[in-house]
Length: 357
Image (cartoon, rainbow, N blue to C red; front, top):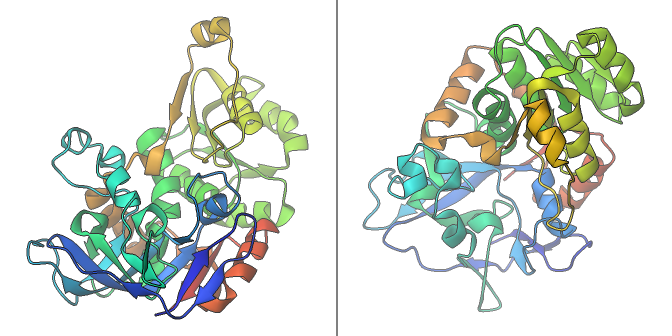
């Protein structure tokens, strides 16, 4: 079968048509991919931000149809439509029992699975998935069943960016009606965070990005004000009187913007870090300011989402017109065009490119 492989850092993916799959285990499912989003986290593997060595089949934001199940699988059957979850929800580990499936203990084992074969050798998929392949095998805990009337391209977006961004606003930050919000970074996750803030009832939503085109898009999805970084101080003064925002969300993953996000939150406010940064990129805070500012600083892994309940909630918001997913799809492409999709992402030309298989 055909797949896109990460073989060398800072290089284009290589398309091969001779990739095969291993055996379906007792609790595994084989999924035929219908659509896969091209996410910035895939690029983060390619440039070394996320430390996953080659060879790897990239892609982790996908949806498809179950083609085969293991003998111990009980939650899905052949023909079911599913969203792939890069963080499984095993339902039995301590985080899952605490309703924190986004921290599921099976995340590591899933990420280390090697269900693909290349030249007879085992090859992993990104986060244990690998949605840049026509089919994949994953444990039952890594799929979420969805209604068959949901288009797979729409469903694929929920596999990462939408769950991460909307979840960061609704679950992690717990944005309240009438509050003021600033979102740094207007890629797929940032746009989703803006939508989440709008859904939560924020009265002021400022979008900050270096790319003017992204700022225009942010207005469509719910931003009430936009600015480039150079205009942020003026925007903060105009919106909050200089006090700072009730909620500040960082959707980029750099120490400078993380620091700026913390500073953007008012005294007693909340700063949420959504973007994935490099392990060596350190952020400094003084012990004095952490005490006296009384701010809440939180990380947001996968939108702090219990995928088994939150993904259906997102689909419900989409069906009722409260969550705009169609407009997030900037380009529809074939797998062979995936490298062009990454270049468009880096140029700020797209919110999401979606691969249709």
